Length: 141
Image 1 (tube, rainbow, N blue to C red):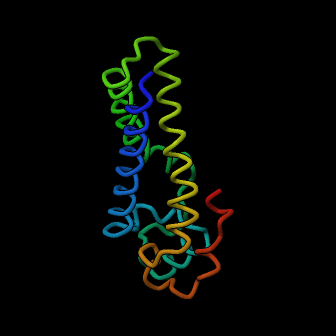
Image 2: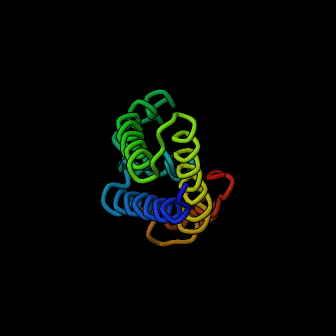
Image 3: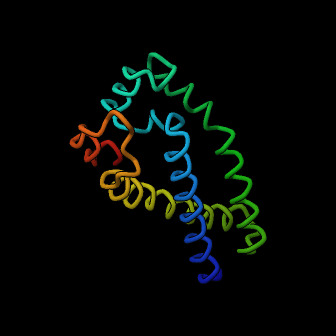
C-alpha cells in the first residue's frame, strides 16, 4: 500500500466532507437540523423554520441519507480500486475502512467538537442564546 496516496486521499475526503457540511449549514441548515442537539432542533421547529412538527423517526432519516451513502460508497470503492490498487475484498475493505474511519474521527473531533461547538457559522438564527446547547460535546460523541 502506498501511504502517501492514502494520506492524500484522507485529507481530500476530509476537506470535501467539511465543504459539504459547510455549504449545507450555510445555505440549507434545515437539511441538517436533526443533527443539531434536540433543544436547538425543537427551538427551530417552534420558530416555524422546519416544516415538520415532530422529529422523523431514525428509519426515515436513514432513508433520506441512503442515496448519499450509496454514492459515497461507489466513489470510495473507485478510489480504493484505481488509486490504491486494491484487488481483493480484504485489502479494499481495510483501506476503505481506514479512510472512512479518518473522516469519521475528523467529523466527530474537528467538525463537531471544535467547529460546530465554537463557530458562529453553525449558530442558527433564533438560537443565539442557546450557548450551552451548542457546547454540548456529548451530543456529538
